[in-house]
Image (cartoon, rainbow, N blue to C red; front, side, top):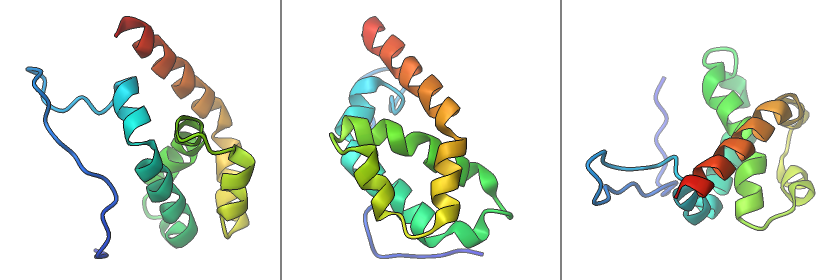
Length: 113
């Protein structure tokens, strides 16, 4: 099933590096944090009925939501209040260990840059 919406979720671009777009660097995550926060919250609020068909995007959204909330200077408590269903909140709590690993990963990348 394909869903179309008339909203911009994220803008991708190719930088000057030979590798093309570097979407995993800390700077890129920090720069796009508000958009990513909106996108992940939107997915968890509006698409949870498709979790059983394709769980990976939902697990990614649940793991990345606390990370991008931090970069967007939004308290996690406030972000959790914005979620409409308990399934999404439980998924975020279940993905907290992964969120912690991602936070450590982005810190390590920041040290290399």
